[in-house]
Image 1 (cartoon, rainbow over the protein chains, first blue to last red):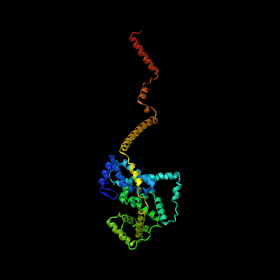
Image 2 (spheres, helix red, strand yellow):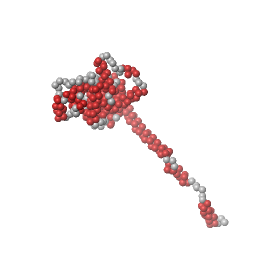
Image 3 (cartoon, rainbow over the protein chains, first blue to last red):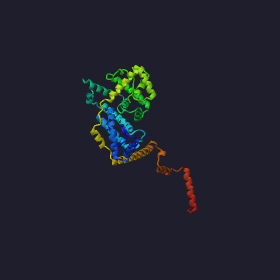
Image 4 (tube, rainbow over the protein chains, first blue to last red):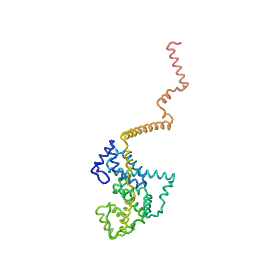
Length: 201
Length: 150
């Protein structure tokens, strides 16, 4: 593997070199890209589509699509952000396919699995979180996952989604309001005593 | 709740580390005197913690192996590129042919006739008017007399 790596990606010159090699048909470059980016992309794919089978499909489509279109990567953003952008679109298509499929034929088994009322409180909280995320509008879900799971800055989210930074701010704010309202039973309602603030990122 | 406080959105930006140094100091000062915003911040932190600790499976080894196995070989990439070019060329031919056929079928009449059809129309012999026939007869008679046919 390459040296000079930063968190979740490579230094820009290394990325460009990797992309050039991949464009020339260097399969080793493809394997490096797969090794380097797949773990994070898989988690993001899972968080967007909600199951492992679709997450694998989305990731595979993303990597193949990216590899075939690598010549169009112009290094205006990082390779990771570019891959995330492709993945978010593929996940959107996947959700649309699934929605059409569900409209045509209800998947009784999956509905049965998600029946609420589990006696285990932790399991119940997990189901509520899953349900709350599932119920989010796709645009809200994308922005939440990019921020909370990928740890993207607002600027990176804006680049990945192809929207202005202000749109990211609004979507994130609204998405958190929706989630907070749905998960209020599991979230503290009082601030820590004597603590004024201090951001996380 | 913090909904009533105009600083609620800024608290969200503060939570995400998206404020400049000066803005950050302003919000920190505000948080000390606004319980609603302090509660908002606590909820944001709890929500982020819950989301980051949510059960998102790691990439399974077998999935990673399959991803490596599906690397498109170089030859396939070249073929794909050629197929793309051929498909684009075929699409162009189809579009041009389609437009040509459409033009011929949608605009009937002389404007749609091809060159040889126009030539055929131009060469068609129209029935002669009586005056023309008379003139022609005079010419024939005149030529005949010059040749000493009579």
